[in-house]
Length: 523
Image (cartoon, rainbow, N blue to C red):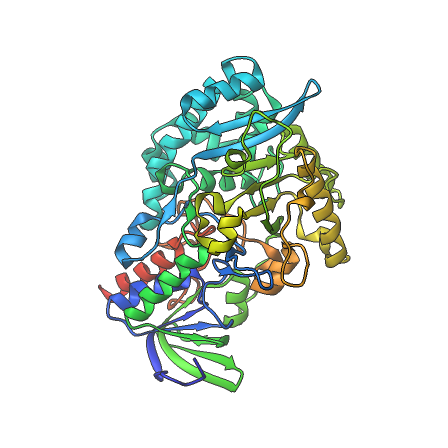
């Protein structure tokens, strides 16, 4: 909307940033009868949770940045009456490998019998499968205990430990590097690697990093929904943020796109937010300000000292294929292998080597990545003609590629990394991926890649970190406040991924910031 159109001079709450967390907060507050204004810098809401058509003249609407849903509580969907659905993937993962000169792999999913047989085919016995079952029974128990707490006031560490009620699980996940548990419980290098990958999504760490940032990443990847399942958003990730925007508007919130907040002045009880549009600057008053941006951007807006950015470490690649490629492992159907998470170069030792090389300032010689095909589970993101012709999407997420590696020449390093990453995939295919790529209206291959520096430029993610900063433990620590969204300014809250219990597409920080406001107001 143009500057000033439909604006009041003051609102109960002004939300800076129209990503999914900001929209969640806007919808909750507006439904509670509060006047709400959302200021969004870009020409559309949604932030990183958007669907776009990246390839010219091709009717494929892809989840360009974030792409799967696990951490979004059903409570938020119910509370806000969202027209949004997810579908479960029938296959959890497939990991190809060559052993004794022949292609094989590990398919997890399709039922207990098939998974047990797949473990036996790879490892020659029952031990690894039984260890797998015991380990994920343990994480499942933890998920059931912890996930419901994400939308409650922060528990103390002791309260959360008591709630988990399993001292071994607490030690494994909260007190010692996850690498110790992986090595103690599993013997097969490939199985170890599959387990470890959940600790490394967007997190540059070794399995034995003493900071335990890999443990925090692992925890958030196994507690979603109380099960740890990662589901496919029907209609793409933009379907969620479109539904949230509709819910916020229907409740009375004003969504102002093309409005960039540039300054927040506050005395702790009232605030003034200055914003910039194509037509000039304006200002609006607010009782509360909720910032759906990074802690760095919050500091810039309030004039505080910004924290040191946390470095991002991922390569995101979107592709459209004319058909799925055939696999060298002929015992696995590509439609199953790519329906779940397809792990590439993610054996335990391969992950350690890639981390060591990147830590030394070099691109990994065998870049690890994981891939999945959204359109196998949800073909609605493709136009009917593409579906009829058998087209499919592929989403690739690369690990251990910290932002520092791209500083010398982002474009050149991106091209080099993409080439070597796809070469690792090709090693497991019976035909080159390039032969399967679709082309756009200009005859160019339908493939795009985003580095941490690209995400920093496009989405203002500091250091390209997809979590805004390193993930936090889901319990209260010094300075975290009651809901984990508080700042040093009494009426300014952080409702983005950098809040405590933020990160991922969850809506949790937006919910919690709204609850903090309503609680203060006595609602």
